[in-house]
Amino acid sequence: MSPSAAVQTAHSHPEQAEIRIEQVLQALGDPVRLQIVRALALATDGLACGAVPLPVTNSTRTHHMRILREAGVVTMRAEGTRRISTLRRADLDTLYPGLLDAVLDAPH
Amino acid sequence: MSPSAAVQTAHSHPEQAEIRIEQVLQALGDPVRLQIVRALALATDGLACGAVPLPVTNSTRTHHMRILREAGVVTMRAEGTRRISTLRRADLDTLYPGLLDAVLDAPH
Image 1 (cartoon, chains in turn yellow, green):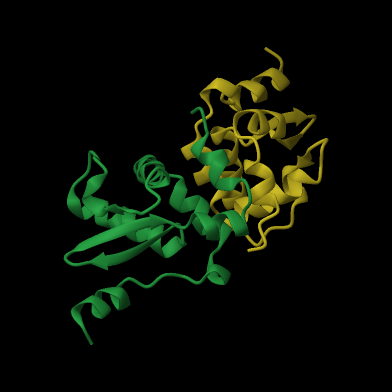
Image 2: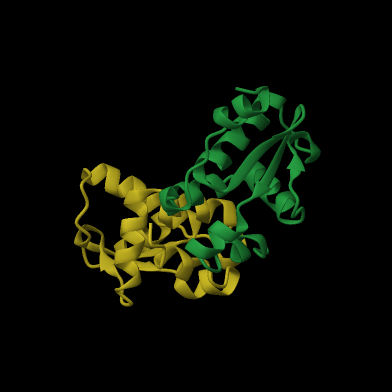
């Protein structure tokens, strides 16, 4: 197994059919995670984990990314030594049409 | 102050302008609370708190209703000795168009 494959294995993602609305809502229902999701929504090719300025420690950032990944909100892939996160917009828009737009457009 | 007014005071509700998307998502991101919201969505005149069959104790039910109320998802009013809960559909649809429908229509 290549190191890259090992990283992919470590970052398991739910299939679209395994995504649950409660878990998605809970993942989105946090100010820091919503900030990450807003940034990822503007970056169709994904973002390196450290690219979003956040007022939290690295371990807290990793914790939030894991919750988003496990809920099916983001995918993470390895590019060399970097982890690139991408919003699963197609999966979320298919399962819950209008949800992500409503959240991203929320005035407060 | 009448007993009814006292109950109203005890159940404070955020104004529409005070509702926050993170708190709404967090309130909706729980299986029991989502079950309550689904039942309330079908009852435009509201429901008595005990009317939704839930596999939880009364104190847990009260806890979940409080979270929904404080997030701005439901209103509670006293009718005699009963508390009637109503989904704040107009407020939520105004602030977050499409959110509630996406959540209620979620296949899983």
